[in-house]
Image 1 (cartoon, rainbow, N blue to C red):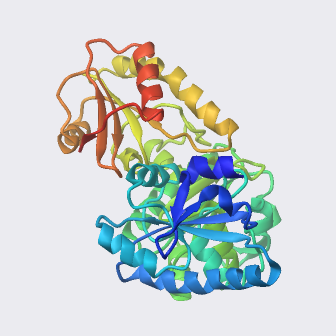
Image 2 (image 1 turned 180 degrees about the horizontal axis):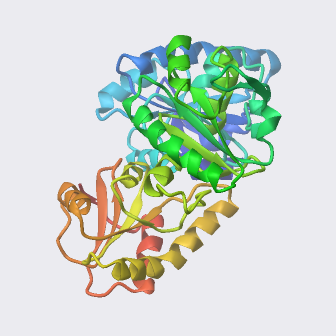
Length: 421
């Protein structure tokens, strides 16, 4: 266990009293699950979570005292910028914390687990370091007594089991989804981007069905009332989880670690995830020619997929041409490296630590260059880490596969010096 956890957390953590605790010592305590709590000491949602998480954690501590073993440990990964604020926050917490000085590891954790907002709580297996549950906030709400510990993922067919609705009031069993590709659509009427996507998605759904593909969309509402749900659902030609079935809606959110809406998760006919970026795929492929949207190792940067730049470090190769031929040649150049990285991490059941893009010449790319203060040179090889506000730049006359591979390897080995964005 110690090896996997030290890879994730480092050698030591800090307790509320300031004492250092060796990560390797967690095994002796019987810890089998670690919750990574990404948050801060400020008021609002983090303060609310802190109170409920303390009560939740206290139940496991009480159990540990009675049974002589502790199944769960929480580790605070702070967003604090000031050490005094961090110290005050840690002193008030009954669990452990990542050391304030270990800022590089903190950023790596935020990127590794694609944390886009706080508070976030992600449960990982203490023996393997692999993610067990991405949305621990819902675990605390739905299972406050910890009866379902360790909250591991279940098959889609099991989580979704039960009656589904059509907007005419007709019901059907979830088994009707078997054998079809399924788009699990997390959305709400109060969310303007959701309503915009729904209009496009209705047309995409129609085109895919007319092409004879076995495809269904399952609406999982985040509406604030049943009336809003009914109004919004009336615009949709697909099926939905009944609004009253809050437990099932919550379990689906937990299953896919939903942190924001709209989100469209596309599943294959066996219920396995094809892509979590269904929103981007639908907007980029209006004619649905590439359905069911298997992920591409290298993407051409566009207005609709630029949002992915905020999800973690991204390799972006800028090319000095509006010619599709040059963009395609750039994709072919970096694709073998991207495929190699993706395959390596897929074998470990982890997400790749980099996304790969080629950027041509357009207003969006110009804006990105301006925002990140990049030179006008092209070709220009970069890695952009928006969450860390850092960039890594390789400005050479000719970009070769060897240069790209060395650049990526050095980045993953922490050998590159970042420049501020």
